[in-house]
Length: 458
Image (cartoon, rainbow, N blue to C red):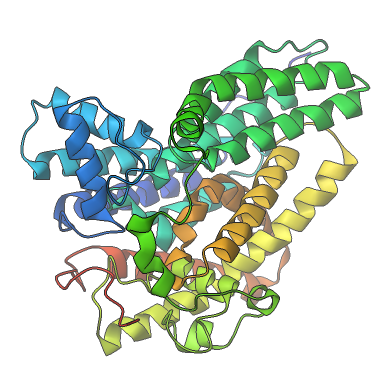
């Protein structure tokens, strides 16, 4: 039976109208920030920007996949590069500046899609709290790694979009609680996961999270066979769409995905060169006091360095190499980031309790995705023990879980704390948004004019 719709008098604002208006204002600033950066950021700056353009330029001239060791980025799955080349061809193969700018704008749109998915989750599962949808948008619109990655030529936001569409789709499917769910929808979400796999190997984690969520749901329903069928449909569709590239590698070169190619040999000289268990167990004070990835205390801390790349940009691919004022602002950002990071942990703990108590909803799929990505990131940094591989950008596929969990914690704190506690939370978030905008609006306070990523590790 449907709940009667509540009528609103013409002179009375609808519930949540203020939050919606504030959210639109935030979105306008976030969009303007990303458009400015896409247009103004130098063409050859960003993580491996020159090498990635080499791949795009190759596909703009001929549709032939290179050998994995042909050049720096040649081993990467091809979907991002093929889409970028298709855009260039559709534009008539114009100058590099036109193609790169168009691809950056599309990458920014993928990042904004993540914001939309986070808001949609909050509105779907907690419609009585427009505050939570507002907080979810704020967290991603002004998350520094999200902002500066949007300005770069790269696949991280595209793969994050495919991963998020896959896993959020699974969450939506499970929440409907259909009595005899078939495999059709699961196969559709597997297709999205397969596109993620064809963009980056981490797409496999989206397929694993979605399949795991279906299996858990089947166990809870007492229908393990049905859950297994949907898991197989998702995994099979994903493998069919994205697995051919890895099979090609296996047949042609004897590996699914290469590691330690000779063309990447310079990496073997990058510090620290090895990892121990202690590197994953401590976060030094240098994380906030000396946010420089080559600082002796920070160099070996995986999670400390990752935190710095989440709330600042210590690789100096977007920001200039030097500047005392830049470092002071970076310290402020890192201090302000503690609160939403704590809210993420608190919200994830609440989600864990909800997922154990009842089936349905986004908690179980998003928790699975988070756990798999963090574990995969830890293994990746263990196998590649170099400071240049510590990048929160590799975790952008966790944008939606981050917004979902952290907005839950912040919504609780901004309603249940006392007046001064609530004021401090809002002050922290407001300063974070303002400082992120000022620091990462390219050409405002700072502009990247020096060589990218030339930290003096040699």
